[in-house]
Image (cartoon, rainbow over all chains, first blue to last red; front, side):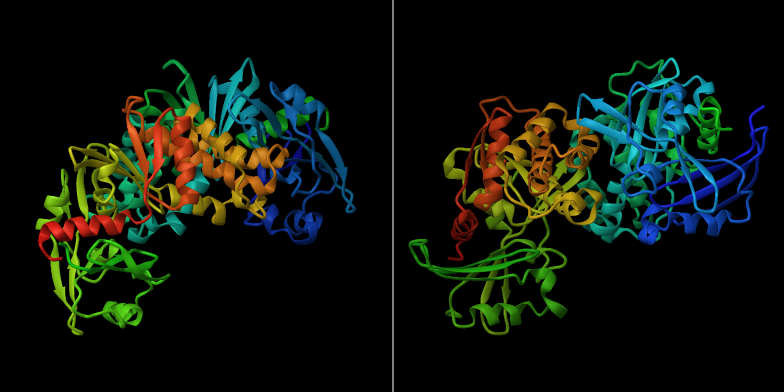
Length: 297
Length: 297
């Protein structure tokens, strides 16, 4: 039987830790907006103990996410695609803290991308490993930099990063498009309208984006719905491109929060693909699988 | 013979005025970074007199640009496409200032766009009117919001706005892509590399943009060249989309400053199109043509 462990998901903007029992059930958890960018002077251990100091120091900690990057705690070299639980387990890296904890870092992946030469991810590999039972062959992990990840026979064979989330924030908060927006509300119709326009003409995005302004100026979209329309344009554009080589039998799974995750499911459905929302705890499941395979839990 | 006049090009971010003699030659000029956004409490007349107070108050002033917008001095209703010098002359609008000047405002155009329903411009119509002698059928006006403008038999029949310039600024100054950039220099090879990638896969822009980061991280593009590469991706993407319905015999003219204008010429050439750089004073020529037709100079 697998041993209990502490699952640590430490990304750019957030910290999440879970107390997992021998059956794989979560018995306690804590989270904070203390991503690696918020940690001063590399005091990662202090931040960790601040949040989980009360948890048994004898439990192995299994960690993944940007915490293994150059800006993180212990930089771990990327593993090349194709990679599955096996390759991740072989490259797990042990770090002993001064407080006596054993931290097992799961590193990220590098892909010799035909389109951009180098593509990289950290954290999403573990979420996908934790979601393989569902039979999907393509995974989407929405976020600042969203990833489209392809799986063949339980191994991640390729992936592509899209700057969708960050781009939304740029236009929403720093561009002229944001000036007409007010009291943003989730407007399903406006979102779908944006997806539709982007699917019709994915290469036209720099032009279509101007319609966020012009349709606002001509009162065809209400100020509170413009951000949903903008989101639809960007997510629709991403999905149009991400699915371009796939036949309609491809099965997608979206690994993200319900709000943004469901938007991706909607866009994928509109593009003609079957898509489901994954389990929000897939990262913990993936860590358990990799750590078990590595024999550290 | 046409009378002398004062040409006023007053846009969002800059103010330019020219003293034009009866032959159409510029005999004096002044400019300032006092675009309409910098004018407080709608004190447009004060700003105007501050800059051209010494110029003869009896001369007609011919104005175009964002000064005719809702945020400008005198809002002028858009004229619908197709429109040429005739339509613009018929819709010229006279405003008498308290200091006794006659200002003739040339309004902008509205296009019932098949892609975004409403598209609009102000100022570029006059630049195009001033450039018709050169035989081009398509014009590009680079800028915060660049415009691709189509002309048939001396009339502007359609146009499309692209958010290229503003988007470049967003990624350069507010995104993670800017963090790896330093000492930006114009690198022709990096620019062309970006154009090439965008022309190959124009719908992939949200993905390709990530390569500004990954190629920087893997030291394949130097920090000082990353902004040229980013610029190439965006301008290449714009040109790929703007030219998609045109056959290779289409002749383009780029109306903009030499630096950014030549980048557009390069991108158009790489896309297989003939392109030249227009006259930087085409806006003044256009104002003269429209004002003459309207009988106000």
